[in-house]
Amino acid sequence: MSATIAIGPFSQIITMSGLPLKGAISDEHLVVIENGAMILENGRVEAIGEAKAIRNTAKVKGMPWHELEKQLVAIPGLVDAHTHICFAGSRARDYAARSAGKTYLEIAQAGGGIWDTVLKTRAASEENLTTSMLDRLSRLLQSGVTTAEVKSGYALTVEGELKMLRAIRKAGQDSPMDVIPTCLPVHIVPRDFTGTAMEYVEYLLAEFFPIVQQEQLARRADIFVEEEAFGMAEAKHYLSTLNQRGFDLTVHADQFSTGGSQVAIECGVRSADHLEASGTEQIEALAASGVIPVALPGASLGLGCDFTPGRRLLDRGASLAIASDWNPGSAPMGDLLTCASIFGMWEKLSLAEVLAGVTFRAAAALGLQDRGRLLEGQIADITAFETSDYREIFYQQGQLRPTMVWKRGQLISNSTS
Image (cartoon, rainbow, N blue to C red; front, top):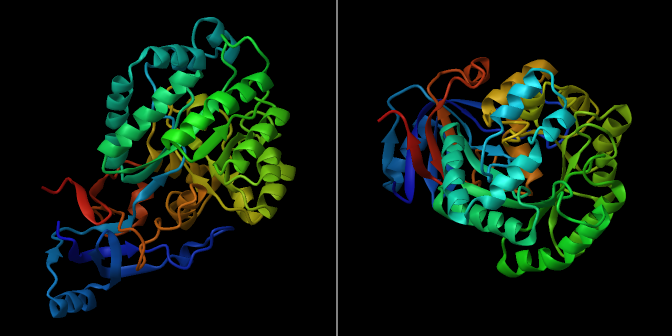
């Protein structure tokens, strides 16, 4: 594709312009350009508006015009702000046991659980991790995702976590998508570590993170705050230390018990992800803070547990991003559109709120302000569906797949040809 091109007409362009980062959003506030078009230049949106006006501008400036021959609705490229897609092995056995009523402890005692993934990921080569992750990134791309966050956290040794981050970097270099790496070496305390949880945190801060910074493997860090993982004391020490070292921060918070969101707020992190256990006190505190709540409905579907209280968070004035949490254990589906569609119906979210949750609000949860809206100056990440009505995208609950996907103005997926 040319560095500069005009594209249209789209039946509708959903710009996401003028919508707030926090609080509830009515569908009436969605800006929908009917019979619209865009000019893309050097990877960004140069102009957007009605097709006739854009076509005239392109003609005057001598720009090439790409005529769309099908009815297409364009939305910003989707942003999946929380995934664990760098891993080895499968946990299908765990899923069957959980569906049959086995508890987490029973599954772990039978050789399953996160430790099963840890052992398989440790045994995998960096090349194998890269190859399998590229396959998963391709699946995300085919579903309209143009930016994805990917965490480490399934090796839990210094060398193993570095291997994961190097694989994530290589896969990101080889994929047309933008991949945002996140360090999660504090997923659980590894069984073969002989010290306390705090000693494990200190070990990582001393031995792991200096190499991460030296090799520029990641600028984001995460921690799982939960009774069976890391407590508030370990989390505060970890987060405050990494904040001083310049890391962008996020927290696995309030998944099964509360406490994590309090740590997230006190440490001023970018986002608090999960929040299925959050009650009134936690919701009020999050709404009053600058922390972005991230709902992970894929985990609720995979575990058969409550969803994040999205409606209550929005009504109290909080932001709300939605991510897939694609991982081999609790969220194996990995389909952001399907997860978001089901979550939106369950929590009674407007389509505007769901769209915001997987576009500009998800981008904000990653500290990205240059995508998630189709506006002049924004990165030209565009996902288009063969329909004349944007509501069909969520009405079909993920079964309407994108027809065309542009990344930084380049057409990288086209099922029309």
